Image (tube, rainbow, N blue to C red; front, side):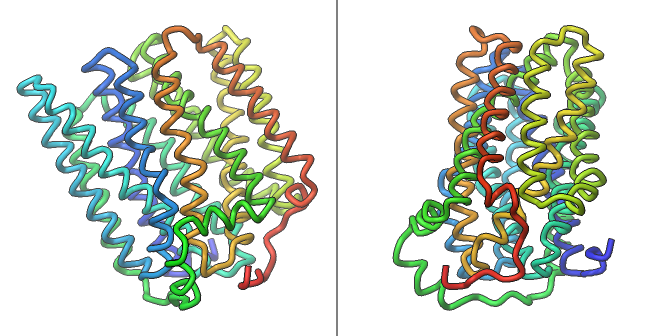
Length: 409
């Protein structure tokens, strides 16, 4: 709780919490609405593709983030999201009244615009954290930021899943709009304490791909980047298959149950459980160990037919996932020179999250020929193999964030 006494960090944390609630609400509402309207997972794949596509260009925006005020960029991005979701709401209202397919294209377009702002919001926030907390507190700060990001994502996915059976899609999107307005208010309260490094301004113009080059030259960053990219390709399939599974098992209410289980597991993993293990193990070893356990858990799920056992293993698996999500970011933040955080994190997101866009198209296309059982097995085995590769890297296995990083990197 000591970190929350830092007013700048607490405003960033609460703003991120509200912003991510907004992201989650419109993503879930749109996915379910488009599946209901089209009755075709292909259009859900298109939506997810457009939502994840902006990550391809994160390496460009990362350089902008390093050269200008992160606070001002953060506020601008939140306002953009607010406007985009407002247009989505109006388009959905028009579509409900007229059943005009043009409105569907409008929804997809503004979802893309909202995603451009949303994706860069997270890059700015992650690059901002080392400026307002001490390096030795990065792992602890990531527990809070993970709760605000991953925990709230699963929690509000759950709530939204249930609320969709009670309230209209329009009402939920209106709540979404207000969440962005409140996040803007909180971000405005952050003090202007950051320093823009002139060294970055000199180097940043020379090459758009310098962030990618930075990752390639650092073997540890390259390993994590390749692993994350492959896993996100599979997570794109998980996003679609859990939606289809819910539709088969009872609709939005069952979807709420699945996401609720994941929510609680992720929140426990990214808070209480993670806080315990980062005190007794190195950050790197925690990442390796619980990545392995998550992969094994999902491999087991593919053989489970009892719905209660399925939910139990699903719950345990997401505890493991929550732990891994807490410890990866401090490794990146510690391994990257502070004045290049926006640039390199932008490149990292380009290389890793953009695979979600490709995966969304791929899995959305083959859902009719690939069973959920086989998908879960593929997902689990792939995660297990990557975790073993992580274990074999001695530097990662023994990694702890250092107190200083050579700025000339």
